[in-house]
Image 1 (cartoon, protein in one colour):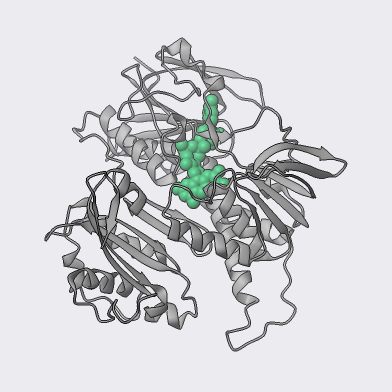
Image 2 (image 1 turned 30 degrees about the vertical axis):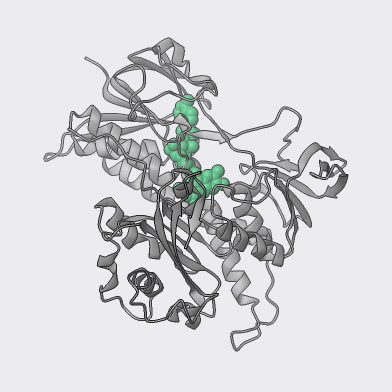
Length: 499
Ligand SMILES: Cc1cc2nc3c(=O)[nH]c(=O)nc-3n(C[C@H](O)[C@H](O)[C@H](O)COP(=O)(O)OP(=O)(O)OC[C@H]3O[C@@H](n4cnc5c(N)ncnc54)[C@H](O)[C@@H]3O)c2cc1C
């Protein structure tokens, strides 16, 4: 008999969620974590960076001059920010630990148990792992009937840039900064790079440069979304090097010197205090000895998984380690799904089509389903309505009218929701209702007559739907720059035609 029913390797959000779902089924689980419980979902990642973002928003609001007060002597120092972030992450870890302690032993009404083992796990064979305690050098050998590998990812490095953690950093080092850098270059204008650019620009203590290879930031989003975020960054003083190619980046004394080549051919060399390399993530599979278990990996070392199951039927892989979609909510859903499959619960394969995401920029950007460029790539006819926050009472009351809601529906009477983008205050709340409707394939029409509380930002979404039905309170023919209503079809040559 094996030591445990299931061995879960990695105590980030994916592994933790898997372990908790396995407990529901009465399984004896060992959860192995080599570093800090919570992984990048908590530390140097999702929760810590979002805490920093929220704090930077508070600071920004405190320094505004349009609220009827002028706050005097608003000072900020990075050490205090870091302390607040640590408090946030510690409180989360405490919750996680508390539950593990409570569930460590089977109860009269529940057979399940979770044992947390500290150490780094690697496979000895397909049913055995060795767990090495890095502090004591002790090694334990454990057998399990099933495994869930949830070892996450780490920042990707570039061969020609030496990340020293002092002057040249990755997201793993941001929280060890002792003070705000005077200047910071961020290499990579993906979501993480843009989020940190927003945080440091909000605090106004750091001159931020953003090196963007593409023509615009957020190339996967529609132009209107990217433009608003890009303009806001620039308005805060961020210099975005669009279509720039990094030629060199190196530490010079206590500073960093980087050279970029512009698309026009000219070169520019700039000196800054710190650099943040933010060019993606790579999977944590190196030390796992997956070959010993016969698990197949892809070209970047990621575990190849089909609906969370690896090439070895009793070994599952969830979260960032598969390099599909690196998000906490996806990792958790995958962890739970794998647990259900292990326990023989019939579950339909996971679907990733109606993903909701949120980017913490200025303003925050919530997204679900298709955007316009994706719909056009698929040659899908659609109707689109865009509603500016300047007409939404809640945003007016908050004096935060930057942003809009954009809804895409099928070009037919049913008007099924294809996707939505919400930019602005409470954007993440606005997306909730749409997410539910999309999940159940409902028509946008059903949102039109819901009784929303007032004032709520969701009222903008509601009038957006009414606009699609020709019954909105505010008329697109009057508010031409605030409201947009179009129908997009395709010409014979495939070109999108907007009417
Ligand atoms: C700066 C930043 C901001 C982000 N912001 C967001 C956000 O706003 N929203 C969002 O949804 N996502 C965000 N993410 C992504 C999110 O953090 C990850 O998708 C998520 O943490 C993945 O969870 P995971 O459990 O798969 O992996 P991880 O969180 O990386 O956890 C893996 C765990 O496994 C452990 N481990 C690794 N190898 C071994 C081993 N051999 N033995 C034992 N333990 C091992 C690690 O120590 C780690 O604790 C952000 C990421 C970063 C870096």
